[in-house]
Length: 111
Ligand code: DGP
Image (cartoon, protein in one colour):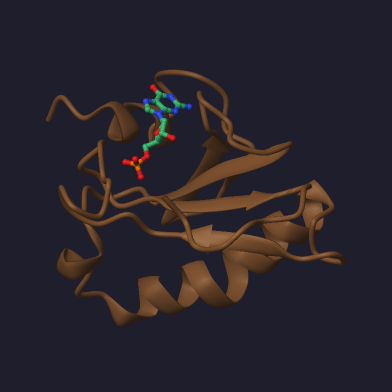
């Protein structure tokens, strides 16, 4: 499959900042804050509504997110997780990705 995030997750493109058996993470090419990491499952999942594997979901949110927050130094002051989904949700890459954004004060509401 010609999916850019599949290629990055397989290590064929770019640089991973984190990797385990099922998940990979890398810096966003268009960062919106000093820390902007994308966390993706290695298997191709189009978006959050297609994520059937509860263990994988739990792994991402309870293990990978805290590790990356610590590794990037945003665990102390806080950070934001964003999962854009579908056209109106602003999803532009159709491979599930969790944005971990931090290193500055966030505003609300998002645009
Ligand atoms: P979203 O709008 O939620 O689908 O976010 C997609 C993000 O992916 C966007 O912030 C830019 C980033 N991105 C797109 N293509 C690439 C790429 O080839 N490499 C990296 N590192 N990031 C990418």
